[in-house]
Length: 153
Image (cartoon, rainbow, N blue to C red; front, side, top):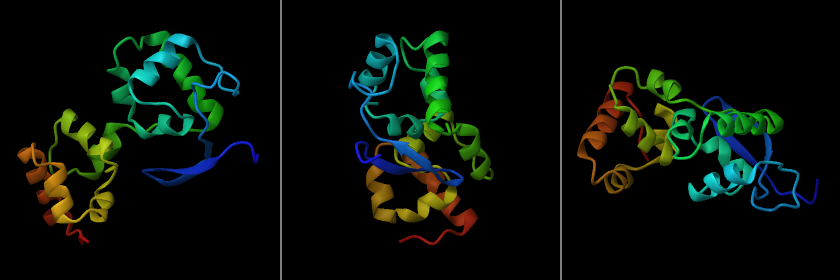
C-alpha cells in the first residue's frame, strides 16, 4: 500500500473510498486497458485513475473515438476501483429551480461545482472571473445563489 499514493475523491454524496492515483500511462501498474482507450483518455487530459471520476458520464459519451466497447472497458475500471461516476442529472436535480443547458452543466462540472453547496466555496469575484465569457451562465449561478439563499465566501 505504501507504493501507491492514495487520495480521497469527492462526489456529490460526500467521500468515496480511497482511489489509487497512479498513472494509467504506466504499463507496469495493475491498470490493464487497451492502448486505444489509454490514448483517448490521455488526449482528453485523464492521466490518473483517480481523475476518471471527475467527469460526468455524459462527458465520456461525447469523447471522440470512445465507442461502445471502449466505454464498457471504462465501466470495468469504475467497478474495479469503486469509482462512482456522476451524471449531469444529479446536478440538474439539485439546481431544480433554475434551468441550465447541458453545456452549461458540463462547464460547472469542469470547475468542480457538482451541487449547489459547491457554489459557496467560491467568492463572487472568483465566479465572475471564471465565467466572464459566459454571462448567461454567470447570471443563472447568481439566480441559484439567491433562490437557494447560499452564503458566499
